[in-house]
Image 1 (cartoon, rainbow, N blue to C red):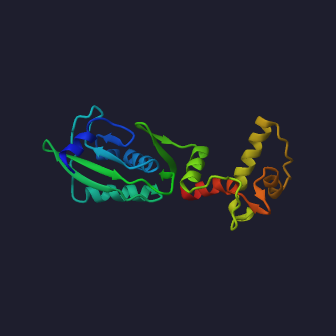
Image 2 (cartoon, rainbow, N blue to C red; image 1 turned 180 degrees about the vertical axis):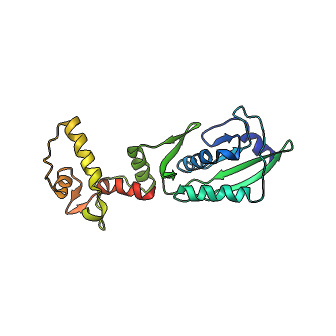
Image 3 (cartoon, rainbow, N blue to C red; image 1 turned 90 degrees about the vertical axis):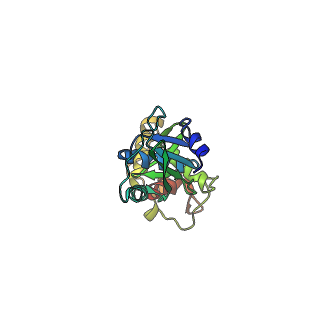
Length: 209
């Protein structure tokens, strides 16, 4: 990395730059990696104080490989960023270069994240579904999925949770004995005998993470 490129990274934190004081913050580093990959390319500088002062880190044998393995094992889809050590004023800075992920969102420790400004935002289920759809070019949630089925791709617990909310918030009374197939039809989640994208997305999000 050129000195001028490092200077830019140490100028300020941003949507694509984050500073970490030490390698001991590896869990936060994993989260930042996932959050950045869910948005665009980014870089995490380790060995930098919150003020921007370089404090440096101590590297041992296999330190960088260990960090790379922790990131890969704790993210889904699996991320393998480029990690390098750079000397600055006789101190070592570790730079994690995060590539943008094509499938999104990226999960860290089974939770979906996305970078927002200088923070790593944990996505709600609705936000995760929206990002999941847009990253895969899904623009019409009523389009059907030919190889999906109610028995294999619909989580009854999620449907029942929705019904509870519908009763309390929307006064939509549905008898407990109503079949899953009928509930989905009433919600417009089955078209021409096939499940729609909107029906299978919650399960798809859970499988990605």
